[in-house]
Length: 117
Image (cartoon, rainbow, N blue to C red; front, side):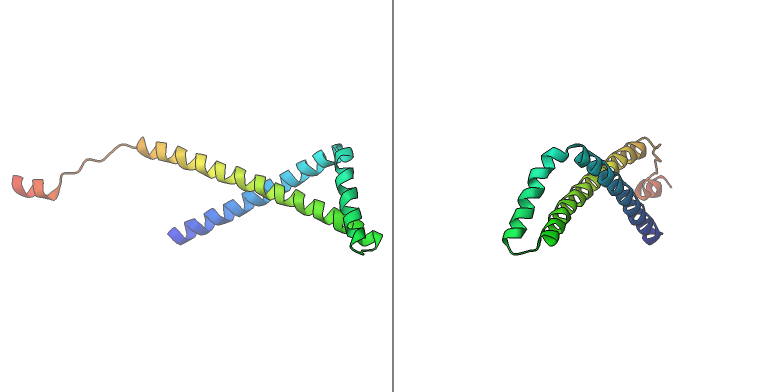
């Protein structure tokens, strides 16, 4: 039962991470497209950097966009992990308080039972 529970927890976390990462990629891409003027100098600098290393213009442009895309996906993954782990921490705290609220069963220790007989 423990193995099944841990597998279900890992699967749930993986699904949540995937959905949150997809959301953040879309959000960051939309934010990036709204601020094209701020990104253009960075892309231009990267383009010139790879041109200076001997790449042809199409490849230099592709490398600049790939680097920017990689940074976007890395930031989205970081945000997704932060949200999921924060969610699990809050869930854990909630469960601890729920467990503390359960009624306690009082049992008589065996040593006390033996002396009363």
